[in-house]
Image (cartoon, rainbow, N blue to C red):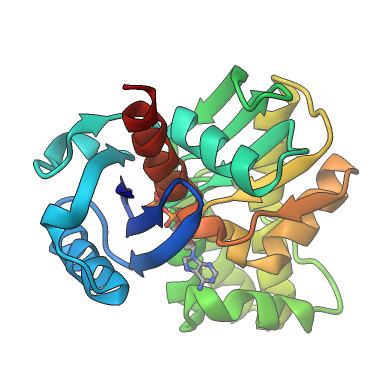
Length: 259
Ligand code: ADP
């Protein structure tokens, strides 16, 4: 039996096709999110990758910030529930999830069965989210996928004192103009994201294992900076950007199996 999970974020659209609740036949990320052609393109690409048609899919669950806009799903489920389901499936020892996406950051606590026991979310401000990194990457004239490598070359950390993204952007421009090395500035940018998310995590506390998901988990520089701030090791979820969509596809499978 085939089920589909769709995760429409602010920055990207993700689609997963799952066979019998375990085998991933397709996992697609299109780097544009809600309000764009991203969801439709991700859906088409996933069907092509799995070599199936939409009518072969028994149930589609959609999640993410843009879930209300996706008409081809049978059901909508919150991102918190889907990330918890996806992470529990991939890393059963996870008790805390840190999810940093395009325009929000969440810390989710879960029990040994994968049920959510608590969560906190920052959705009011770009600081501590993927958008902050996108803004800074543009100033540095690099791609977000280059930030890790650049930050790895840092000899010092140039601290970014502004928490506001707009002021932090001006600060980065000034630091570069003053001759600071871009690698050192990137280290400061990663530290800024980590501090912000660590503050959020402090509100619910951390229980190991701590697992990171979302697009920003692909930036090892942020992961390392967070480990330094939180003083705990962090496991990066496999297919970190797809965990919400994997969770959605698993929920679709469970709902059908229960019938
Ligand atoms: P959302 O679900 O909110 O749309 P994602 O979980 O897809 O967001 O995360 C998007 C963020 O992930 C981007 O803003 C960017 O900072 C980061 N990102 C995306 N791709 C990469 C990559 N290849 N390397 C490093 N960071 C990435």
